[in-house]
Image (cartoon, rainbow, N blue to C red; front, side):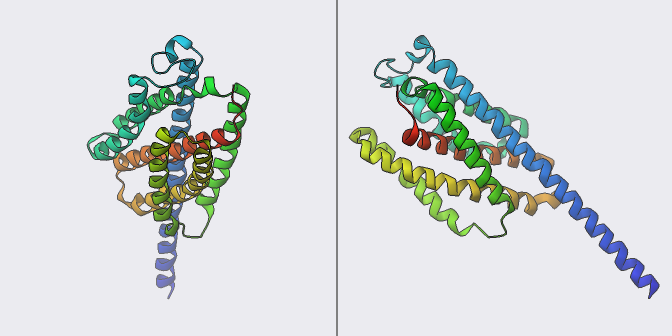
Length: 249
């Protein structure tokens, strides 16, 4: 009996050690996700500010007075969408370092596509909306990380909503309807708020599913993909909130 108890105790100790190791690894993984996302977000706004506050640089992509995009402006506008699909297709062939470099390049291009906001909106309203977005994002992501409720059921619905938003936004490029844009912005905030919680839970679950593999290269790339996902949630939520609450110049 003593030998049995000793074996069982040792088993429990080993299991506890493995659980502690996974928990520690999860914290490190999420820290890398949030850290990479934060650097990418700051890079985006730095590029957007640098170009948007310089009439000479902005004129390369848009008319500084009307903000209408030229040919290069249209390319820059759709380049982030193309890069996201390219990133998903190439992730398996990239190293973790290569994936991180690609993400930062994507963040810089996104900054170019967003530069016009520093002409269209006041600096104070941009800062206020950024602060509101940051607080909202933090709360929603924390909920997704800590909740015991399975959020996977709403994932398909939210992704379909994103597709619908993209189609509606492309159509409204030609319609130029403020009412349609307002409706799109409201729905966009709700959809990306839900995606923030859903994606955070999915990133956590993906790590826990693969934590035992010990494949540091795969986990490194998974962290970059997670950072990209949350980055897109943040940027989109910010842009839709800015359309609703931003004060125009």
